[in-house]
Length: 149
Figure (spheres, rainbow, N blue to C red):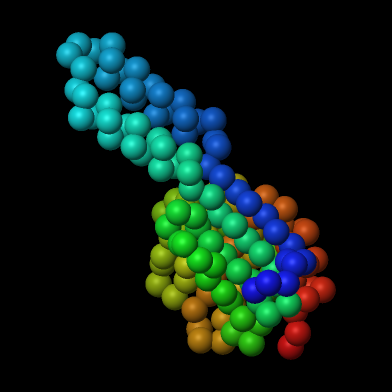
């Protein structure tokens, strides 16, 4: 994995609504009477964890690499030989997977941070992977250039 990637994307949870919600909960806890320090500490821990989360996607000569830091210390590789087909896809994160992050559903897994677009990878073992992206066209172009049947 020492070669330079043909494509690299790093996505983070920086949605304004998420941070307004967490800040609003913390403010309500402070404003509505005696402060629940354990509750406030939980909000801080959750906010810190969400702020540190990032999805890293790389297209390399030997496959597609995914890592959701800090949950994955090392990259998860999907080798080209494990991919039957792929396509750009618009999906419904809440309905199709129950939200964002690393999401499992029967026969499929999604790595997504925000938005509703990504690349659908149909694997030879029957399990599919959806890789969310903010730059889907660039990701598909990189896969087109590197992918070998």
